[in-house]
Amino acid sequence: MRTIWNAGYRYGVANEKSADPAAIRQLIESELATFLAAQKKYLESIGSELVPAADALVSFLLDGGKRLRPLFAYFGFLGAGGTHSQEVVRACASLELLQACALIHDDLMDGSDTRRGKPAIHKHFEKLHARESAVGSSVGFGQAAAILLGDLALVYSDLALHQSGINTAVLPNVLAVHDEMRVELMAGQFLDIYEQTRSSHTVERALTIARYKSGKYTIERPLHFGAAMATTDKTVLADVTSHYSSYGLPLGEAFQLRDDLLGVFGDPELTGKPAGDDLREGKRTVLVAMAQESMSSTDIKEFESLFGKSDLDLSGVEKLRTIINETGAPTHVENLISDLTNKATKALDTPSITTTARQVLSDLAIIATKRNL
Image (cartoon, rainbow, N blue to C red; front, top):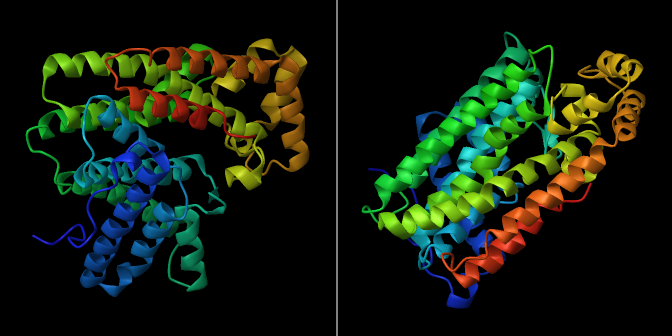
């Protein structure tokens, strides 16, 4: 069996640093870099033609990202009474590979040209095909490459978890959470694309999509994933995961609502995407659903004439922003974010979660929902 991780990596972290999100994030970054270096070497051994694919995936994963899912998993582990180990960090890092799969495929489905200020994977390979004056369709090649690299990232997430070295006694429970998380993510993605085909839209449906497409797999399930690594005691596990759900579900929804606002009003310098990108893509978010419920018939007509136009210019973006602002929907979404975040942090007030983890999870709630526009 080929080596997945660098056996020479220095194990352990000072006890006081095991509760420091910045220190854990650095460990996660190191583990991802080590894992991806090993995978790149293996791909190169298959054929030099795979080097661009390996390089693109390495760049996609290591050149950005907040590592929220691995962090929630790690502190979910500590909160359930777990003790730091590098094996657990490795397992948590595997969730970032699942996130990469979701983002690569999401950009393709949404027709997004950029991610974190750089070309999306399908656009990267489309441009590579064109630069090389290759035979066939540049667009088709880019799309196929994105599908395959997204699938590869999903395979890597399994591989990284299985080779992490966590206690085999906890592995069945961990895999059960991991499987459920992936099913929910794919279900949410399908609901999202299905919603775009509907002639009418509701806030309730938009909230359901937000919960399954992003919220659950960003916060609630990573917490459950971490807890499952900490104990095999079914009673303890049921208790702590119920509290994690009370915290993670509202916070996950608040996280996605913040993304909804950023997708319409976000600064491209901060979001890494063009201004009003969600408006060009025609994303039927909670923000848009709330706004449409309060639009006049005249505004609805103008909104629908511009919304979802891939060639929408900045003037059109500003028109749509003005219509949305005049409904008061952004204020309602901000209030909902605050209410959901408060509900989440109150759920941490329980001795079932360790004191140290409660403090960090409270801080992470702010990080997840207070991102600047």
